[in-house]
Structures are given as structure tokens and as C-alpha cells.
Length: 161
Image: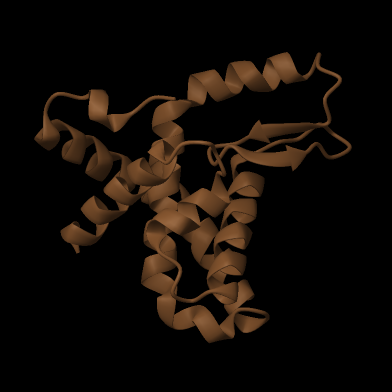
């Protein structure tokens, strides 16, 4: 797993994170806003006050996943998966376990929606869940590295505001 700790210069890491945030917001902000609005209208009205936190967690995960698996890598994996007999793969920018639909479509929107659902469900069950714990639910692993990396990015995102 790639780690931001391998980067020598903290200011370089922060610039990378902020630049990626701007790019990801440009590309996905409307998609995310529309999906969250629908979710808040139905099942998650009780956590709408955590909107900013939800967005920052989502973007922190997205930045880390995009760093760990850039678009070119995801594209290659998608084409390789066409020849795989596995029906569930980690896909899209969020690297969420998704089943393929009848057309074999695995896209970023689907993975973002899945990620939002995981985050919302986690926060609805425990509104005081830490960023690190939310990241562990999103990507359970044997080490805390993933959660620490997401929390590091999250803290940079909130320090910018």
C-alpha cells in the first residue's frame, strides 16, 4: 500500500492533496451533492448537520485511493477484469467492492455512491465515530496504516477551511 509518509516534503504532500481536492471537486461535486441530497431527504436527515464532515471524509478517502490506484491503473484493471471470472472486484475511484451489472459496467459514480452509503450508514449508527474508525469501516485491514493516511488527509482538508 502506498503511503504519504514516503514523501519527503510535507509541503509537497499538502500541495498534492489540495490540488487533487480541487480536481476531484471539479469532476464529482455535482454528482456527490445530488446523491447526498437524495439521501438526506430519505434515510439520513438526522445526520445532515454532519454534511461538511461527510464530504471531507469522502474526499480524504477519494484522494488516498486515487493516489494508491491512479486512473491508468484502474483502467488496466478494468480491462483485465473483463477476462476474469470473478463477479466482485474493487472498482472505480473509491475502490469499493462492486458486483458487475449486466453490461460489466464498473464506473466511478457507482463506487462513489457505494462509498457514500458506507460512510452514511456508519455515521448513522454512531454519530460520534472518529475519522479513523470510519476509515477502518470503509476499508477494514489488519493494519492501521490506511486509517491513519485517511485521517492525515482529512486533517489537511479541514485545516484549509
